[in-house]
Length: 319
Length: 317
Image 1: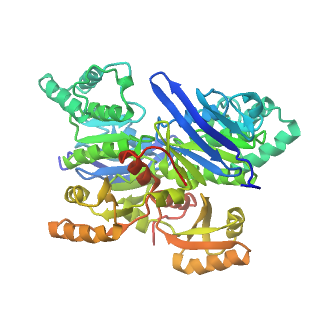
Image 2 (image 1 turned 90 degrees about the vertical axis):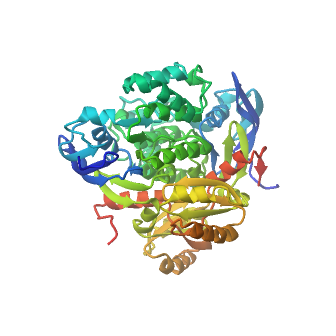
């Protein structure tokens, strides 16, 4: 087969439910050993795409090849060659550590000759050797998470799908988890992450942003911040904030104004040109300006900007 | 201070034990009237337990709490007139329409009909939901449900609003929308205490209490918190993040190192000095990289620094 066995290749993928187009001609390709993020708001088509890639849903048209197998023609082979883990669905809390591992080994048909090796491997990677008989429900969150990942990859799949794997967890635990993910990626495993948490998106090597079934941006996190933001960002410290936001709605240079804690974030076309204009505009409205400065956008700023532009029916890509 | 208004919320030494775990450990803080105050920390930090004690629905084992002047421990019933508590799973009736849910809560709080209609129209407008009065609550998106919960919780014009993780599971666009509504509410004079497990959300609050395993780590404005880190933060952009990490992991001056999708995020003692050092080190090792830039510390940097350096006890501003 021509396709790389350790990757996901999607070409012109379409999924329709009646009149509704959930996935609208999506094409992308992941690289071996890449942590690839699939980002989008709720209802953007993320879950539909993942279900197709996991061989659980047939596409209306187009093609998807996962681990070298066509998802429409060989869904069984696809399922045997992927691992799946989410924050919500993972382990059986009333079973012991070892019982969970054995259960998943059975579900994934790990051959009996390799069983002992894989169990030991899972215990080592989750730091649970010697704790085999603990009930999973009593484990701290970080341990559970590593065990869940261990169970999802017992059959050594070349591709793992992660669905919001670390939302809400302790940042230290999250960092350890992602370190583990990057180590696996370093060994050649392709990791496909779906999320709408920017904290998780920052850990991905490349990101695709999907909105209304279409890919509206694709690149590394820094490329997205540099190239895809519609306009530039200003931080404004002034008082009173409420009056400032209201006044700025009619300021010609300002595309968007929002309160952000004790200051304002403005989206403008060009930061350098807008700084004096904003200062003057606020002063003319009797608002005391303490500071106006250009700041780099966060991934969330980019995400909101792209989805807002796409929602207005404009082409969000930079011209 | 003379002339200073009374705090809207006072928590003093709040403590709650559950079998085998101290969920909240001598927590003290004050919330000023008209501010958005954030209880920020990961799952298991004690946020929900704290909110329940403040809402007067769970008695603390130790300590006291006042909301808008009423003692919620000794007299929870009278405190309930001034506050509204929106738990993580707000009790919306999925088979009732938006309008019917609002009417139900208005009746529960004893809001009169004319008052209710005016207030509901205003709140629905602010929430951008005026078009859906007849839609069953069960057919709303996650973000919309949260907004409807907020409308119901506000129908009786409470002075203090307690929100438990209102943006969990809500995507960034709806989350911004939700915060826009919160800022509009404080303009009306409402005081808001909200909890979140997303540390980046702390930046949207006027002041925050950062919690970890039931204890207060820090308590201040987001800007002051960041300056408390007292360290520099560097971002190394590189497609070879793992090699960058291997090279710099044990370098002098680094207190924490995090591998990101397109490089490495470092907390260092002296950003200027270390960025020059690391630049030449990576060049000598032949590891390709784009830039090494000083970046603004995040609340997460502060949290990780405090927890890993084992600093104990709250630091006040």
